[in-house]
Image (cartoon, rainbow, N blue to C red):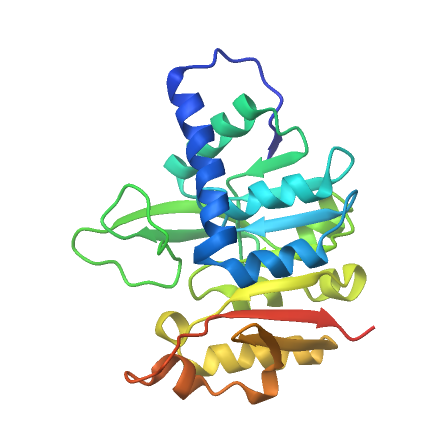
Length: 253
């Protein structure tokens, strides 16, 4: 982990990467994940602390940085080396001093995991739960836990957390029971049966319920109680009308 306040010589590529970051962030807001970004906009305030686990190319990190302002803070985590390095240089060039960027992964335990990157390079589907195929690349990444990082090490109260880890989200959250009890952050998490199995998705819902959170999903423009979520109709049915994979959890108190 490091605060990205370093000396460096900007290049044309840095300008291009900043342009790509802003363009990507606006595509998320207007088209790709419009409802999710609107949820973020409505639930994250100035001077707060936000966490982006699985930052990828920074679409959510960008909006988090804008929303919390200069006196807020964003912890952004991306373990894929190429994505991490590109995001690091973009953050430096753009002057986003409220972002703390790290290449750590999160899990239930502190240690190392093998991150499988489909076809090498970079991928939004990189995961520690995938089986390695012929053209995939496997790299060792260091993992921490929500409890250790935010309670033991940084002693940080978190207001909002977004988690997109391609099937490992339940293990990430189970490494943060004390974190959830203490910070009570609002949560946006992706969870898909195709990544981790139907049982793990439903177990994630049960875990958040046990932590005294109320869950929701989007049905059109409405937030609907998670008790009405049908995993077959929304994820497994090949004839489904729409695919739902992002879920929202708000503390009951």
